[in-house]
Length: 137
Image (cartoon, helix red, strand yellow):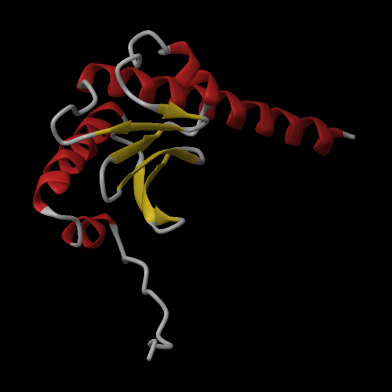
């Protein structure tokens, strides 16, 4: 008989990581520290039941799966810009997959996070300019 209780999403990133097996957890904790170093003003949250960093909107996210971990730069252009550096990692539209044995290089993650911050800053600037323009009319 199936339980009617729904899966309760984790309250925060620490709660998410506590449920991840030791190997992937260590890889994701390292990734988390790398993201924090690149984006110290970003805030952490759970969005769509995965750890997400927010800086003027969703910035990047990560998750653990049965056979791999994923890094979500939330930008097709950022993934495309680093296609050569990512050649050894499976990618799809918005996902970069990696394993405990072959984590993403910290320097590459930092570059992608900083590029995402610039994208979010530009989008926020454009949104504010549009708002100022419509307020003058």
